[in-house]
Length: 325
Ligand code: RIB
Ligand code: CA
Image (cartoon, rainbow, N blue to C red; front, side, top):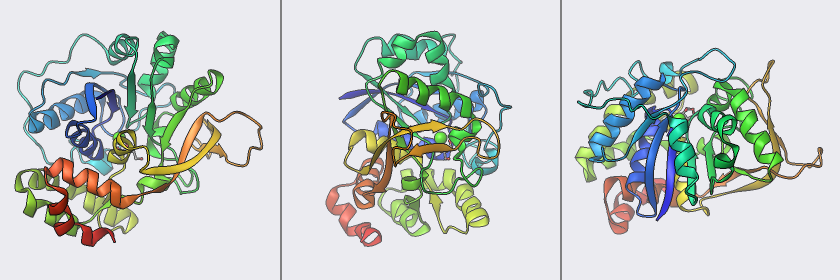
């Protein structure tokens, strides 16, 4: 089993990503760290607890991190994720879940120093930039850093050129990408170019409810708001579930393919938050990022659905293969 820390901002798709990770035998989620993003950080903490409670996994520790971006004013995404950050499902608070004294950065620092631990980042990179400030060695000991964020050729979702996680805190994203460049490291960037291909449709959700009504109903509860948002704003019939793809990529690195390129994040002006991907080598700089451009959707959906629904491959083929020809 590979040890991972999930740094996230739950968030509807973050929640689906946590469900996939905790139903995957290849990974051991040693902790969840929360960052301000979709939801304010305290809301994110309690939302993570709601998901862990549903999964019967309150044993997984959750730590609270940055409550605002590095420089900018904090801008949440509750318009997309609902006023409770979980699609206005208004799930009951989990009793007795106090916020621990230990901060997210302290947990990251002490856990990463053990070695052999990866980070799957599903929100703004604020906690990771703070880790760099406080303990560069701990940051550089991350085994694999997989981040849902950014975009290459695909248009943005917060501006024509910027994706939310890196737009909400461009300064932290820049610190992470620049630090990786300076120390010959690399980030596996699961951007909108590939996540936009992962659309949960009403038909898939209906089948999910038929094969596992408990999980299917739960997912419907937290995604119905998200479906409406996607239709109103992007006329998409369904909802783009970005974050689970980053977990899937960690588990099976063949799901995504792309390019290696020097990448830098713009921190100001009209293109603030844009990941500038030097795919042609203009700057003659060593790659610090793997930028994904193609996704094996069938493999993703088989992994995601069999694991979170607890169904066999043959059940999957019977019920779902029709959607992913
Ligand atoms: O732009 C999509 C990303 O921003 C996803 O991680 C979503 O949860 C939000 O954090
Ligand atoms: Ca997220």
